[in-house]
Amino acid sequence: MRSLLWFGLVGASAAAVHFGVVWALVEICGWPALAANVAGFLLAFGVSFAGHHHLSFAAQKARVGESLPRFAAVAVLGFVSNELLYALLLSQGMEYRLALLLVLVLVAAMTWMLSRFWAFRTRAA
Image 1 (cartoon, rainbow, N blue to C red):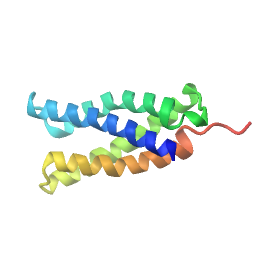
Image 2: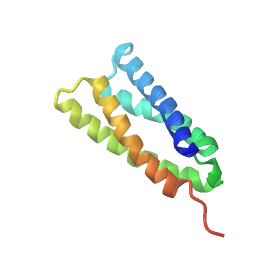
Image 3: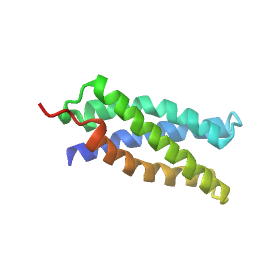
């Protein structure tokens, strides 16, 4: 249960970074939403990995050298899912902030499962 609580807090922090970057780039800099989403993802990745490694899944004692590449694969899969679903919702006329919020929640569920059971697991001794 503690792992899930930390996952939520770290995920919310990473999502806030992601959302804030997208908002700033779209509203202040005039970037297209999908391009801003790439920048948001890249900045949120560091927050996400550090928090999940040290807090959410710390009890699993995964080494950075093993967990970082696996988590990067999970994050890339999550981002591809994010970008495709985000593009679909935007193409249907959904407002960009609402679409992003929905996408971030759905992708977070997938990320938790893959992180918990693969990215941060340790090898059996």
